[in-house]
Image (cartoon, rainbow, N blue to C red; front, side, top):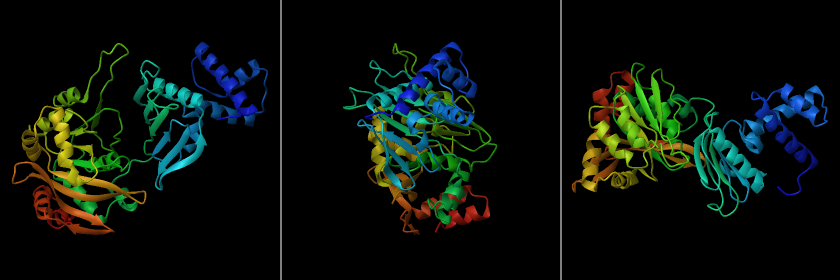
Amino acid sequence: MSGRSTDEGALDTLLAGVREDLVRSPGAVDVPRIARVLRAQGRVLGAAATLELTAQVRDHVDGLGPLQGLVVPGVTDLLVNDDGTVWVDDSGGLRPAGLRLSAGEARDLAVRLATSGGRRLDDAVPWADAHLPSGIRFHAVLPPLSPGGAILSLRLPSQDRLDLDDLERLGALTPALREVLRALVRSRVPFLVTGGTGTGKSTLLAAMLHEALPQERIVVVEDVLELAVDHPHVVHLQSRHANSEGAGAIDLTALVRQSLRMRPDRIVLGECRGEEIRELLQALNTGHDGGCGTVHANTAADVPARLEALGALGGLDRGALAAQVASALEVVVHLGRRDGLRVLEEIAVLSRGADGMLTARTALRSQGGTLREGPAAEHLASRLHRGADEGPVRAAGQRAA
């Protein structure tokens, strides 16, 4: 920002005083603390003004500072670009927020949030990926890696834990697709939720896991905690980054191995994006039915190529990867965005083609609210039918549309 107002300068002075006071006397940012700091600076305000100022200071010390006012229902992402412009992503899609941060504001905010998430962010380590105490997923990059100022990406947690019924009401699913997804989970069919960035993969995966039987033990492995599963028996494992000396890192591959010793009924890999896919496939091939995870992919047809690329990172060639996937993963649930709305576009079945390589065949495709069957529809229905034991789920397994 250029031409900072007197009020903004007074706020900066107050913030500096509050931070010094917190060093001397750690604790909450409350009205008595703010009043004490104001008196020390020769300022006296009325009760209402002090209360309002306390909330504002708390946002800067414990919250998102100048971005706090953008945290409203429906907003899923807050983005600060290197030129200081701020963008928000909500049900209407990505749009400018009409706010601009100075280079100093953006850097100070990035460093403070990284510190609150237990990560180092400075000139020596100019990027950070963290999970904030508020549940926000945070990523930041500092100059010189960014050409201008700091770049911040914040993924806000959902205020409500959505189930499949909620997603249907929001227009992401048709009633028939909702029943297919329930049957998929109850049948303990291993699956992947795929889609591009911001399509709601984690939200859908959490909603599907809500349908797992309450006596099942779900072990969730993630790089950064993001999956909020409404289920009575869920445990989480989170990877650990290396410290400033480059030691102490624990990656997803190690955590997937550890999960096998935790008596899991379902192993869930929050996001497959590296060599840990090899460990997940091996785990699912050792009797752990119902495993699942998410993968970035533009279409369901692209998933085999994406898995092959990930498998190569784990030392698996195309043939070995196809053999592993064919017996470990069966279904792809693919999401997309249409006019800002996150929707389930396709359900496909993974199998080996005539050449032995991995393919994804469409079972169901949703277009304009109409559900159409594809060449793998019969295979999907028979697979769900074998595991379904309830009337509506059995019907979904026999004929989804």
